[in-house]
Length: 143
Image (tube, one colour):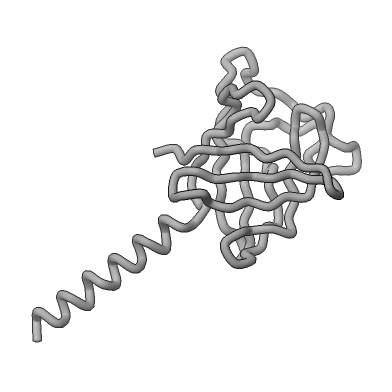
């Protein structure tokens, strides 16, 4: 009887570990798709059943604590500090992707439709798009 309980417990732990590894929740190092340089660390989290992401750290030491001067003036992030700013909003799970949300590029002040998906447990793809035009970045999980 004890062995059966132990086997059930081990299976539950294995299933929960697999489920967590397939989630985008966590911290991700962002890579600029134009320059290939590390830009920031974004923390992705779940809130009310949707996925959000905020800037946790800026890697460039020359950009100590920038302000989003380029954000649209009618956006709640206009003139706010970039560190701590929510740049990913309202992503909903759709199969193996999370979509129907938006991503903000605080350097350019542009807001794009967005979707994300995991290539593997340590590689995330983020695609920002307008109509048929899109750009895709690869982010790496911070351990």
